[in-house]
Structure formats: structure tokens, C-alpha cells
Length: 141
Image 1 (cartoon, rainbow, N blue to C red):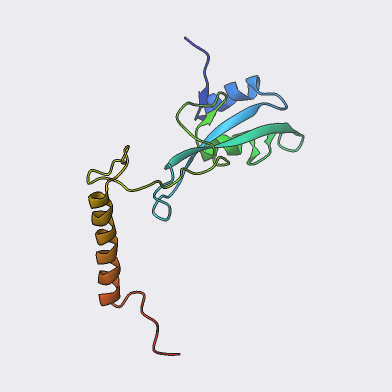
Image 2: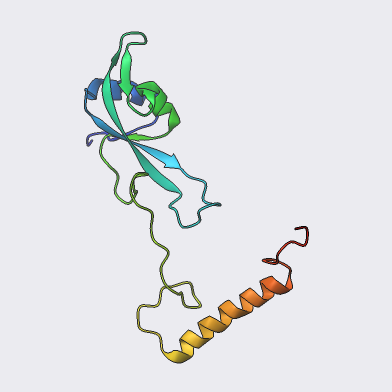
């Protein structure tokens, strides 16, 4: 069996306490709510560093989470950064140019007819919002 890198339970916590030392970098998975930011990845990583040992609770102290036990109770802890997940501190993905009808990016230059069709879509949406009363100034002031 290979070296364990993910820790989730109390039994895993005992094993994790044996392998960490001051300066060890740990990665915690964080579940994000994407209703307010649909372009964000729903699962990301938080990077935490072991900074010392607490004499009060005799556990390792982690800079962003309190103790090692607190960190394991917040989610899955990794000793090696898992592939495919970005850090919370990294830049977000950019919203890019127009999409075709299937939700895929255009990977070519658009001709005039396609650009006019996209502009007509934007104009129709703007006109629909104005007709529905959205974007209208208030009559109270």
C-alpha cells in the first residue's frame, strides 16, 4: 500500500500527528457556494502551515485553523497538493468572449453576420429589461 496523503477521520488524525512537523504545508478542501459566483470552482483548496505545538492542548498549531484536530474536522486534509484543484489564493478564472449555442467558446474569428447576431441578442435582452421596468429610474426622487 502506498503512502497515505488524505486524512478525514480520528484514526487518520493520529497518523497525521506522527508525520507533521513545524513548517509542514497541509491542504484543506473547501466547498464554496457558487450561486453568487457561478464562474468559481465549487471545490477549492486552502493552504495551511504547521507553525508550532500548543502546550495547552498538546496538539500541532496550524496558522489558519487553530489546531490540527480543528483542521481535520473542517474537511479532508492532504499532505500533497491534489491535482485539478486550485488554491483559494489563486486568481479566479476569467469570463471570456462569446459562446456558441452549445455553451462552448468560439475558437475562431467571427464574421460580420455572427457579430451582428450577437449584438441583436444583446439589444433584445436590453429592450426586454426596459420593457419590464428593470433599469428604469425611480419616480420617487
